[in-house]
Length: 447
Image 1 (cartoon, rainbow, N blue to C red):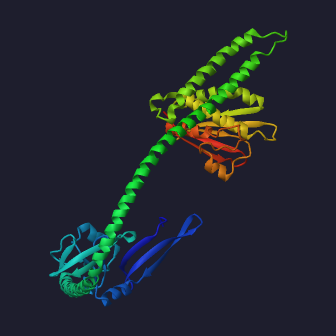
Image 2 (cartoon, rainbow, N blue to C red):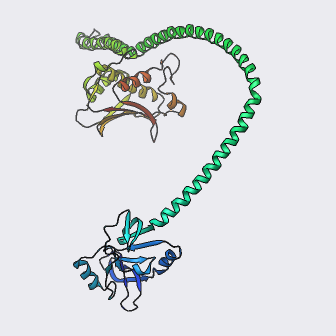
Image 3 (cartoon, rainbow, N blue to C red):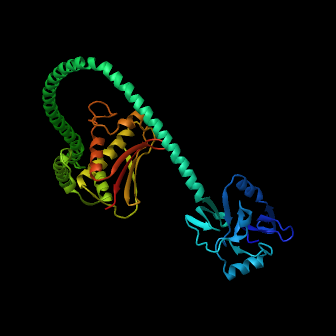
């Protein structure tokens, strides 16, 4: 009636037959209106154990034997019961009017070995948790001794047979080796000649390999210098473009058809900042040859992103591209390099701008999401362009790979950006958006 299944083993008050009772609630929607009970006769299981010649007993939570392959052990306790246990058993009429006695007078707490009525047994047991029972499997030690003797006798016979077989095989092998030993000497002489020839050839090959390795080292140095030069050209392109824009705007006349001196003076600090930035880029690009861990500092991702947007503002306005930045009004502090982090943002913003060159929608938008998640800063740069093919996604971060026309890009921007982010212990990945366009994801650990 409490809503759970009930289990109980006992001797029927009317039938005087033992059985296992199971009850379960009968529900009418959420209400329990009755209890269904069934009684299961477990004696066929006992008969199976007896026919198999096994010594198996099952005890309930009080340690009373309720099932056994030996009928005389039933309803006996493995250990003496206390007064409370006896009183509860009597109140429940669990075993009718049978007196519960101990199975053996000198029986201790069941262990690996136990003695019952003068017979020594090896003991194993396992819990039956649902009904709070325990099954005990008992093996007479006399049977174990007899089985051990038989087993060792079989092992001895098998061992002797194996030894005889081994000796016979050795005899055949000796005769076979004797038959071919005359040919081995001649073969060894031929092998020695071949070995000396091979040693001579190997020495020549090693000398050629040493020369080739030296050539590869020189080629690697030249390749590294070429990659570094190409990287510098790529990274300095954006500041130079911005400088051209500022200089051109400073030369525009005002309404009186005169050069605007105030406007020129306002542009000079920006030009000076771009020059400083170009100098810093040329220094920061040394990460191709050495780690820059000592150059890391505590920076705010929002401030770095704003600096990058300032540098790319003129190109974005020229192509009518709007930037939508979504982030909370908090600081996102990471350990990184200010200029190198700006390089990454500038590269991703420019890639998004170029990806939407042929976009036919009226509103061209680059969306930048910044958020903190599980101790990491995640920055997503999304465009609404045509997206990327599988081949492009696979080779996107390889050096000199580009989808832009020849002469427009060196194909190093994403390679440089990836190396920079890895140096900051983060990752840079790319994927296509669910709708259209592509998304670049920067993940950096929070400081």
